[in-house]
Image 1 (cartoon, each protein chain N blue to C red):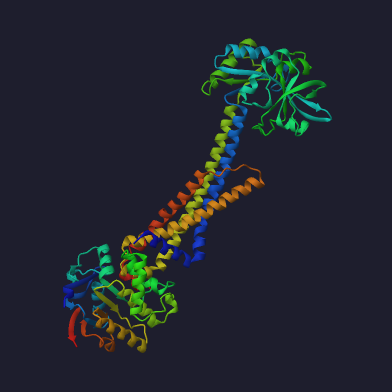
Image 2: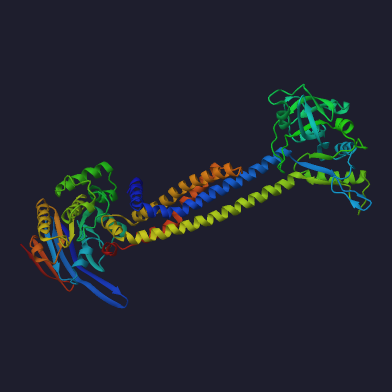
Length: 227
Length: 408
C-alpha cells in the first residue's frame, strides 16, 4: 500500500481584523491508498478547515502536504485547480449539482475542465453513472431526481476522473436514514473496489462505516482509531 | 477547456433565463438598430447630394446678370440683360483657367407635336453645355457647331418631354412646334433626374443658343444671354477661374472700383459641398446619439451580469471545486456577455435595416445600408460585450471557491 495523503505539522491561521484565530494547530497524519477514513469532531474543531486543505481549496499557513506524492502546499490557484481536477473527487452535503442540467452532463463536468473529447466524456460519465446504480436516469435533469439519487450523481461526478481520493463532506447530512444507509453502502462498496475515501461527519453511526476514525478537537487530533 | 464547450455553457445559461436575456439585450438591440438606421438615412442623403453634384457637372461656375437700377427701382439678380454671347467668347478666349463655357437662355413655352402638347422649359445652349454637364444623347445626335452658327431649327428633348409628347415612339427626325415655329428633333438626352433644387432636369427642350436668341426671343438685344455656365480646368483652378472671369467681365463692362457689378458668379460645387458636409455632420451627430444608447445598453449588460454572478456564486464554486481555473470562469462569463451583445447586435442590425427600408419606402427618403456600417455595428456590439462583460467576469473568476461553495 502506498501513501496517498501525508500531512505534517499543518497549521492554518485566520486573520480577522487584528484578531488571529488558529484553526489547525499542527496536524499530522497520513492516509494509505484504499483506506476509508472518517474525520469527526464538533463544529469549530477544525475538521472543516482540514477538509478544505485536503481538498486543495485552501492552503495551509505552514506545514507540508503531499498528495499522491506531490507537494501541494505552495501551489498557486491554477495549479491547485488542476490538482483538484485530476486527483480529487468531491461529494458535498448539499449535493452541489448544476440545476436544469441532465445528470450525465453534471458527471461530465470534471472531464470538460480536463479537456477530454466529448465522446470520451460521454462514455466515462455513463460508466460512472452505472457504477452508482443510476442507469436509466442519465438524461433526467437533477431537479427531477430524489435526494439519494442526486447524491449518487454527485458521487458519479467524483468518480469520473479516476481520482486518487474521494472527499465527502457530510454526504448524508441532507438525507433520511434509509437513504443514508444506501449511500454509505455505496461508499463501502466503492472502497472495496480500492477507492480511497475521506469523509467528514459528526454522526457516529455514519462514521462506523469507515475503517478508521480521526477525531478533531480545538484544532488538534485527539483520537485516531482503526477497525 | 475548448471554446465550443464554453460557448455551449454560455448559451445554456442564457437560455435558462430567456426573458431576462432578451430584456438585457434590448438596450443593445435599440442602440444598434438606431446606429444602423441613422447611418442608412444619413448616407442615403449624402448619396443623393453627391449624385446631384455629379448631375450638374464638375467644377462649374455660374455667371448670371446682376441687378440693375432703373430710376431708383432695383431689379433682382438676373433682371438685366447685360451678359452677351460676346462675353462668353471673351471668357473662353482670355481666361486661361477656363476649360469651356456656354451661354444659355431660358424661357417657358408650349411645345406641340401632332395633337399632343406640353408646357416645358426651352433652353438655348451652345454645344459646349452638354460637355460641361456631361449630358449625352441616348438616341440621335447632340447639338453641333454648325447648328449653332446657322441658327438651325433643331432641338434636343429631355426624357420627360419625350415621354409626354411621343409616348413610346422614337422622336428623332419628327417635327415639333415651339412658339409656332417648327423644329426638327435631332436627339433625346439621357435621363438626368432631379436637380439639387428638386426640379426635374429632364423636363427641358434644348435648342441652339443662336436659334433661341434670333427666332424665339422677342428681346431687343438678340445677343444677350440669360446666364453663362463655365467649367474650370480643374477643381484646384476653380477659384482662380472665378477670379479671372470677374476681372475680365469687370473690364468689359467697365465696372470701376466701388461700383456695383452688373453680374454675379456662383460656384455651384462649393454650395453643394457645403450641403454634403452638413449632411455628413448630421449623420455623425445622429451616430453619436445612437452610440450613447449603445453605452447605456452596455451598462445594462454589466448590471445584469453582476446580478448573474452573484446569483450563480454556488455554481461558480462547484465549477472551481471540480477543476475550473480562474481563466475558465472568466472566459465563461465573458462569452456570455459577448454572446448577449452579439445576438442583440444581430437583431439590432436586422431591425435597423428593416426600419431604414420602411422609412425610405414610406417617406420616399433615400437610404443606403452599407456593408461597412453593418460590419462596424457587429464588431462594435461585440466590443461592448467585452468591455462591459469584463468587470463582472473578473469578479466571478476572483471568487474564493470555499466561500462560493458555502454561498446560500
